[in-house]
Amino acid sequence: MAAPSWGLAAARAGVRPRLPAARRCGGAPAAGPPDAGVLPQQTEERPGSGAAAPGPRQVPSEKSESFASMLRRSPLIQMGPAKDKIAIGRIFHVVEDDLYIDFGGKFHCVCKRPEVDGKKYQKGTEVRLRLLDLELTSRFLGATTDTTLLEADAVLLGLVESKQTKQKE
Amino acid sequence: DDKLLSEPLSHPDFFNVKELFSLKDLFDARVHLGHKKGCRHRFMEPYIFGCRLDQDIIDLDQTMQHLQLALNFTAHIAYRKGIILFISRKRQFCHLIESTARECGEYAHTRYWQGGLLTNAHIQFGPGVRLPDLLIFLNSLNNVFEPHVAIRDAAKMNIPTVGVVDTNCNPCLITYPIPGNDDSPTAMELYCKLFRMTIIRAKDKRRQSEVFSELR
Image (cartoon, rainbow over all chains, first blue to last red; front, side, top):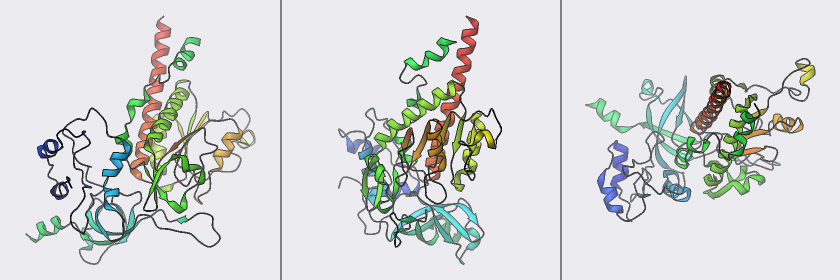
């Protein structure tokens, strides 16, 4: 696998990988730069959050990437089945105890405010989620199409680690 | 005056709407994400690129073409001083659409649609009412996942429609369908931004052309 896993960790930490990507790809078409959805080598995958931009391009591509190639490299496809994958989301709306979290999929998920560090979950906070389903749908008896709840399903694990470690210090 | 109206029609993309968006913008705004396979509408199959782990992916190459046609048409309508009505029944984006319409100087209807608004207009609003010249559907379904009544009514009243159709929508009666995601906030903001920019651009072009023709 040519895709480096450090690119994924670096993108998550906010550091932007610069030259190595361009040099490595050499003669390959400009659709090379590693975005956050790089093929992981670990069993636990960490797709890029909805908040992080998909991979910086320092080399402006003359030949623009095709849709099929963009799709293939996107975090959503690289992630695979959504069941039990860890993702980072951002809270974009709060209604008392309900947190509406956007993690980069089609829909947002709604989670209850946890008892631990409850006050820290405000609009704009980044949180860790374990995804269960990207869209809650079900075919009911007698229906021709599925009924959709227009929501994703995820379990809230906690705040993004870096914040917690900073506060411990 | 004749030249003012006929000149834009001779160019395929008089208002250069192609430069307003790119494939990357659509991709980053999650326009290609569709609903699950079970929610798919049969007539949306030509616009679907494929199905990945039960989730439909919309073909963005086709979306680009349809979006360019739709924006071009909207620009021409705005250039000719047509009335544009934005319609959506999604409460999440109701405020966004109403503010977009206000910024363009056009109209929006994001509340419950009463039966005869278009077909019974002369009785409901009084005689001599001017109906909209274009309806733009940013969500073509209503709250109970049925096609919005205004699609059928616009077809009855010969009013052209532009509509964003997701994988669970029926694109049949819409004149310029735009296959794309209508559920994510990023996608809706992108559509609103594109429509706002085209309408403002077309109106400015019209004002410029009128000034030039007056100078002559």
